[in-house]
View 1 (cartoon, helix red, strand yellow):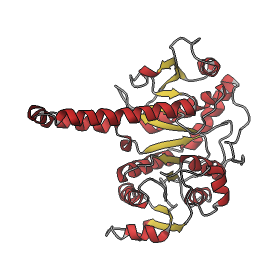
View 2 (cartoon, rainbow, N blue to C red):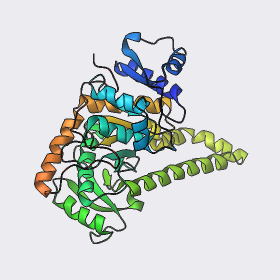
View 3 (cartoon, rainbow, N blue to C red):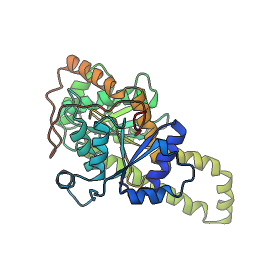
View 4 (tube, rainbow, N blue to C red):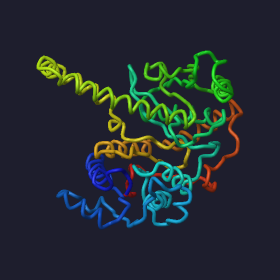
Length: 357
């Protein structure tokens, strides 16, 4: 049972999702801890709840590959195996991101034609939410990996955000196609030739402008960009609170602007989006923030439900095949470092993190 705040928000969010979406949930972790948390809830439907014992965890200080080998009862490994066996339709974790990536890859395998997985974060823009990927699953990439990320991100934009024809942008240091390093220049060529709505290069200052719906980069760049953004939001919120409470006049003004400030907070709050789907593995996997609240967990499970219900994995597989034919850029699958390649196995069904009915 991962996450900075351990079991409480996971249990609360999972039960909220089960009630709202009429799902069953499988909670994997130390069952005595889970049972203690469940005692706070009076309306638990035991027919929609299953607990599975897994008393080992992968800590943030451990190498995920070695930890998963040494800890067969690690909760993330056990949870991934539950989904792989078809006992649940999707996987959610707010624990160690690297361990989640490794466990999902090991249990589900990769989709045919996809070399590397990608974490896709939903970000706010001036117009509507957009997708930034990869934000940490694959820190070293080749041009064909960025093409695959763009295809998968486009499917996510359609299924998850309802954007019929998403615009794809390539994160670079300039708008001209000659700008950037060897990776971005070659990726630009592949994206331009692919059956995508490619909008060209996007500079970092335009990420939140709404000029692109899917913004593609390697995992190192994306993770740095995302964490800078998270830090900036926290600083801006703190400064606003200080200024709005600095004088009597400002405090009165804050009362008048409270509604607008709440709307602003909702637009930049990661818990509104729930989590980041891990794209490329052959099973629905959602990775939550370590600080996920019950609201974030509920929304992450809602995302998993939509993905499973809309056969997201199958749609990604079809479009990856189409992009490979068009651009000739998808090579044989490569395993993430430290994880053996396995044939793809799919999670299926209609419940986000739910046991099959």
